[in-house]
Length: 142
Image (cartoon, rainbow, N blue to C red; front, side, top):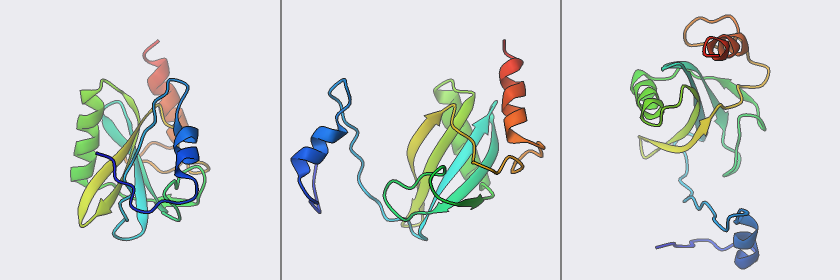
């Protein structure tokens, strides 16, 4: 069942615009973040690479479109993300989440995700440059 809680503008036109070329649309329920932040955790080679958070100013806040800051990924979140990446056989990408009612809510899984803009020095595992680390990982597999 799909519930539209707060219709805004022309709902039919918005739905039509959301349809992809294959006639499918992704519908997500809005969940307000507990503290106003959304988080993105980047992973590479079965480990957490880095984490960032952004102040969610809209439903479609993105690490590339708004200022972000470093976020130390909690161990339980890191373990979840590594397990998710292994489950889908992905060795690099990112997962977005927020906390709603104190619980993590994962809402986006990106394969080969774009790293945080202008922040190549943030790394959970001590790498000097996230882009260099990603390039070395890819080159080691060709």
